[in-house]
Each structure stands twice: as C-alpha cells, then as structure tokens.
Length: 236
Picture 1 (cartoon, rainbow, N blue to C red):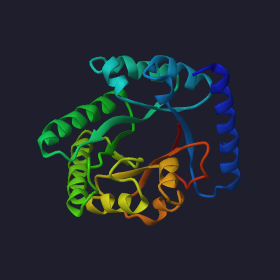
Picture 2 (picture 1 turned 90 degrees about the vertical axis):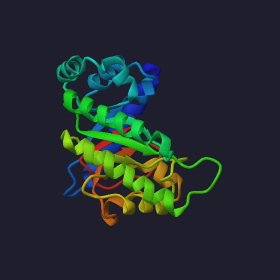
Picture 3 (picture 1 turned 60 degrees about the vertical axis):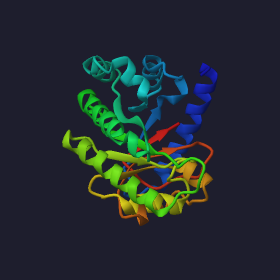
C-alpha cells in the first residue's frame, strides 16, 4: 500500500471515529487496523499501524507462518509498538467431514498461538458448499463445528469470533442467524463485518442487539454505514 493511500485512508477513519464518539452513549469503542492490506508483510504492517496511533491490529495466517514457533518474538514486537493483537484470522471452517479433524486441530493450534502472543480473539470464516445451495444440515453441522472450535479455544482462554463474509455459508443476514442459532453462544461470538453484512442485504447495527450471541468486535469498511457498539472496531 502506498504511503499516500494509507494516510488518506487513515484520515477517513479518524473522521469516522470522531463522528462515532459524538453520537455514542454507553459504547466503549477502540479502533484497530487489519494487516490484510500489507499482503503478508506483517512486520511492516505493525510498524505502520502503530506509527499512526492505532492500538489494535488484526493479523492473518501469515503471522503464524512467520512467528508460529517464536510467539514470544511477536509478543515483544507488539508490546514495543504498544499494539494489542485483537484477532487472528485463523482461516476457514470446512463442511467436508473428511477435513474435520484437521480443521479442528488447525484452529486449536492457532488459539494457542493467540494465547502465547497475548491476543484477544480467534476469528474463523465458514465455507459455503460448492455447486449447490446450503441445506438445513449444513447450518446444523457448521454450528456444531464452531461450537467445538470455540470449546477448544476457550480451554486455552481465547474466545472464538465467527466472521460473516460474502461467499461463505453465513452470507445473508438470515444465513448468519441460522449458523449462530445452531452454535452454542457460550463458545461462539459474532465478529461482525459491516461491509459484508450490508452487501448481503443486512442492516449492520442490528445483529449485536438482536442475536442471541454477543459481539466481540466489528470490522468496519469505510464505504459502509456506521455500526453499533463493540469492544474493538478493526478497519480494513
């Protein structure tokens, strides 16, 4: 990302943040930035994000590739930059029964990585079935898988955030609700992506106030309307 583009984006985020502060009441919103823009150059992303005053960062699988066997090194880097690892994007959750054990093991490993780095949440996205429309059994199965991932993640002290996404099983508002209805709210929270939710026909402020699960964070796209309160708002 070019520095000029980054600064322009950040100024837009700052303006949005200021508007949110004017209108919020009980909300306690802190802003972070997602490292996806840097294409896997996470060390540079951390430096740039911290330099502009953000206090949270979302990292992806590339961080596990780089620091998977050295989580203490990443933890120290984040501490030096005064950043919190708000969420690690842990990847997809497959509906394929043959992939179940590998999927569960992968996300459990990543949850331990988040714990060792001093992070807050593990984020996952569900997969939509290929070549056909989803059926009721898909939502029930995904709810069970998310619950099991969340249970294993909770065992190491890391909450699970379910991230809605275009092209995923939880795409439309109704589909997101069906996935979450099938999951145990004790182990699965919603990590709301306002841009994807609105693109799929939803009204972003509604889910955190109407669904039976709690919101752990929001990912806000600058081009979308403002969203409701959460602990962290990560801007991508």
